[in-house]
Image (tube, rainbow, N blue to C red; front, side, top):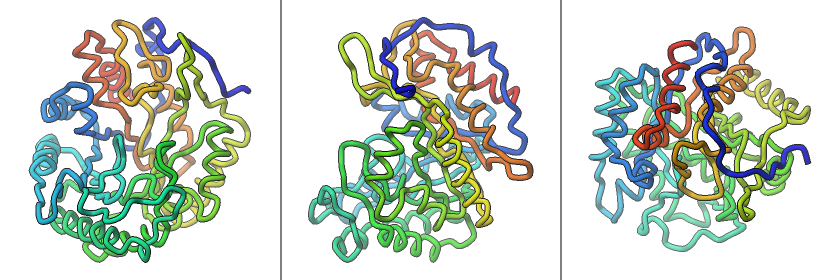
Length: 364
């Protein structure tokens, strides 16, 4: 199969990141996402990592309100960490997309329901409907309302993100899915609290036949998250990962890699045409810029690169996505995914990821 590769998971570093041409972005704004929990998992100090990243001249940053961290117990509501992140972004002159959750938010494990918000377990294989989980929808909408009310006067916030890949299964770990009716209730509450800003919803864009077939089968009853985002949101975010590991097999790893086959291009054209026909905007909410290996935390091989995303792939993936713009209809934004990893690599003696990002910002 063209899209399957059995390769060693690490490879020698090259200088390609300093040589590849960089596509012009035109009016597309560039930015990153910041994941405080991922910074911690990498052994980094979260606030210091954020400060390092904010020194780079990008336009926009995506931050997340994580329900189980802000409201770990019933009656608690501690936004101190998020307040500090927003303050830092504002001082650096960045625009902000704030993800309000509530059930799912970007960054592993993506599920951030506090214990008191889940009276009964989410049943595997089920659609999570508000009528079946009244306590969950009540808690989720209350959290969204409180977050939006608290931050809607922050001028730096230019959009809200609702859920994360809202109606898709949670990777391979869970088979339950949020029903469209659940997400519609959340969206209604969000808009009631702030009608002045656009709402972004995102979805995973399959880049291989296997993932496309699997995603279609698992979401065939109500469509996948990109379908739902196109119908409900103002701004549709595409999560784009051209190469990722499936399984480690001894000293090698089995990878799925995009071959940009005709069906992939046709699917993109249909999606983008549908979004634009509705008068809505497209962005890349996650452009792969860190390794996706067969482990939860990306590896940090000494003076070598992980095959799933060496530094030059920041340029390749960005360039491929910028090519999706059409005359008069550019991507609204491109957010690089994995900025915390770049800081880890830099502190381990490999500044190439940060230098690649700086080169893109300078030349795009």
